Image (cartoon, rainbow, N blue to C red; front, side):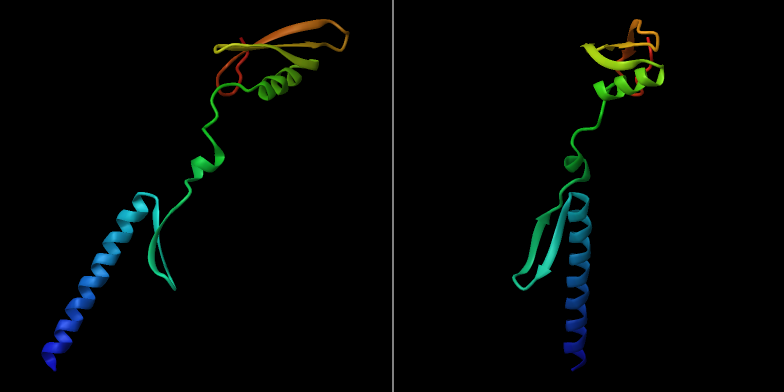
Length: 111
């Protein structure tokens, strides 16, 4: 009887140890193990970055318009976008048309 309990305890320890190691490796790779009525099956988790799309880089047209409005321009329109700069055009309170250029990098610094 003692030998049967020892064997069962050893088998349980090996099973629990192998499941714990497998889960940590699987979670590190973005795979989740689900236990259900059909048994244990691996499920790929959707990565957060994939849901949101690629990380934002540069100055978007919307950000450039907002920066120009902050500088006091009205009716702002984007006239040119290059890999290095974003050019916008807008009117001042007096009706004068002004052109502004922003660097095409995060934060839209003015050139």
